[in-house]
Length: 345
Ligand code: SF4
Image (cartoon, rainbow, N blue to C red; front, side):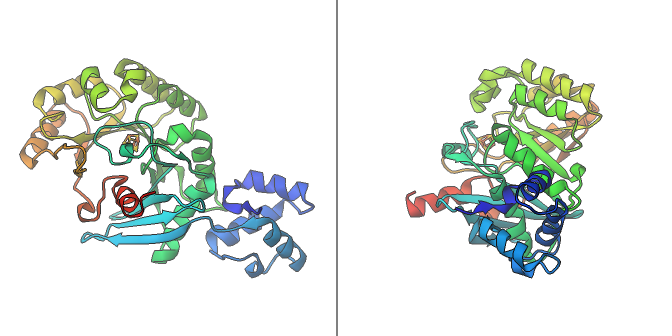
């Protein structure tokens, strides 16, 4: 069976070249052809000898995903559904931001974290995505739109720190100057709060941004809506985050979905202030995209603004995000869930 080329970091491809009688610089040539010149066949790599082209072609596959469906919303947000080689569906979202094209990639097929408000939590984890399957989401979207992605968030289906090695190898490929050359500060990994993995990530001292899906300001509520809190309660999570901040001179982002009558009162906002005050952190307040199975509602605009005002008055940096792509099943996992209903997989 052929190897997936997109699974290889530059270092791993250099090792492969050395072990297989190719000069190590061959790896950089291949990276540039694939990630920068966007060729899809080894036979188009004109600075590589015919003999090496044939060897590479016999050894590697270049593309790993198949495009299945694209939905475009009124605000131009695009949602892609890709099919993996073993027949699973994964989602990728492309957003047109003021600062460029931003993509939200999926890291697992399904998710075991069970967050109550999330469509992906309805579909248990089947497996981790391979590096090639995460990388190919970007290559396929770039090809589809004939554009260049400038920002990446690993915030689609799955918990990235539950697929740590593959996600970090993905980051290495997209960040490499010979790869996609996307700056580390333009990449964000979002976790629901696996404290030991936050410490491990802190030790990497990477420039990649870290975002925490917090969504509740006390243990009782957080454990109800995010089961991960039973394993790593807020105190333990905050300790891990302080460890991260000590080791990295970076600002943290907290994601907080505003759920009507659940976590959006003034008391919740004040609890949040207490938790975060003094940290080099910033809160993203996110309107909820309702998932019909869960029964949660999005907070109304007046309540959302009052929540935002309480944070701002207490000198907590925050933004209230506008909804994007609500008309295209934009809550993570929704499109995939609908596809599964149709195909009964
Ligand atoms: S919010 Fe993220 S971590 Fe939680 S169930 Fe959904 S995909 Fe998993």
